[in-house]
Image (cartoon, rainbow, N blue to C red; front, top):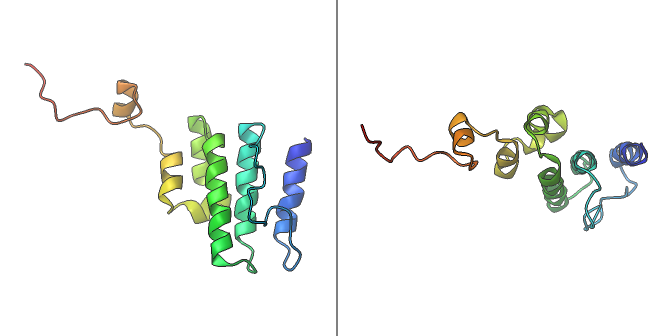
Length: 128
């Protein structure tokens, strides 16, 4: 419970104006990477909370959103995780970002049957 509790406190601190919360520096909040997919997801949420601060420059907002994308690359390992992130209000600002769209994209039936994660080639004629 420790990491989750620390992340929640950091999220609340991030919403305060004026004080500089942990994580708003120019480096990623966990340079060595999170310990688990869930912790990476929590970190992504934290970065999105920080990105909403009104006192940040647009450059810092973009950096925080980029950190969130990095964390989601580690967090979204299964289809239910992708569906959850797609619907999570924490990531509303990322929904138009092509990187986020790619992360939460679920494979189509054709991609699943080819086993490659890429669309099957439908241009090749089949023998009758």
